[in-house]
Length: 187
Image 1 (cartoon, rainbow, N blue to C red):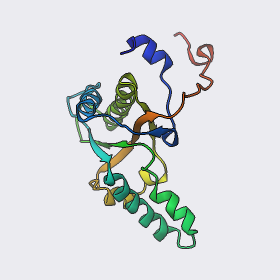
Image 2: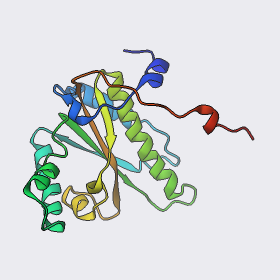
Image 3: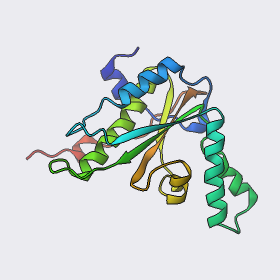
């Protein structure tokens, strides 16, 4: 297992199309989800939950996405519908991070949503620490209410994103990172 600071300094997203199997074992998935649930959470509200898409569940979710896409884009070529159908098929495991907020006198909705985002990032970091490639993505379907309903989200739930996890097929290239001198000020 890599040193924590080195892991955080060098972590990179791996494109789902650059992933293959195997994905995490059941024990590794349990570890990833445990770490995903260990995030800042003012008020101990746990304003998030996880949906696991693996095996043919990825195909079933793709059918939901393709069906909604085809209905909303009646003139779309069949190839475009097929692209939508395969949205969750590249990585062997995809975790949907569902975000919801509850009225609270001390914890604004924004803080609750940030907790879901922290959960997604912890999932990415945990998967990376275990030697897998990971990528946190959204896409049009992550914000489409018909797709969310088809994936079983409740009306008051949103999707913080999908974390795709698998074995990288090649080393990831780093990208330019922000220059800290342009991002840091002192008060």
